[in-house]
Length: 115
Image 1 (cartoon, rainbow, N blue to C red):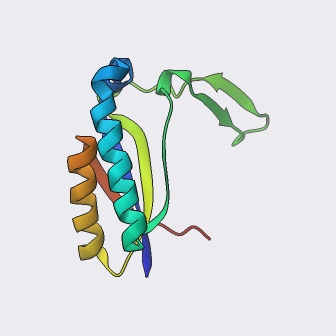
Image 2: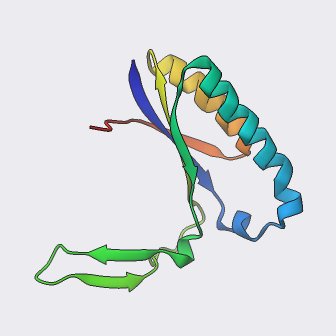
């Protein structure tokens, strides 16, 4: 079986949503995770913290540079992800469609090589 990464693409404002408003979506996502596990598609998943609280490490030059944040000006960002197993891209796309519905966000799908 191939592995795919399903990236959840969100508007940064979702991080400002009050917990009581977001709770139904969290609950739906938890049920979806349980479905993936029961189907044998689950590998792992996770949500990501705020982009403005990130740290960037750049060791591509002569010294390591550590800076606050990614310094991106974007309307969308990576909010979380799943790594799943599926027999082919068509099956992975069907799972991605379900993921998009439960988390109310766009899903970017790519092959994943966890080696």
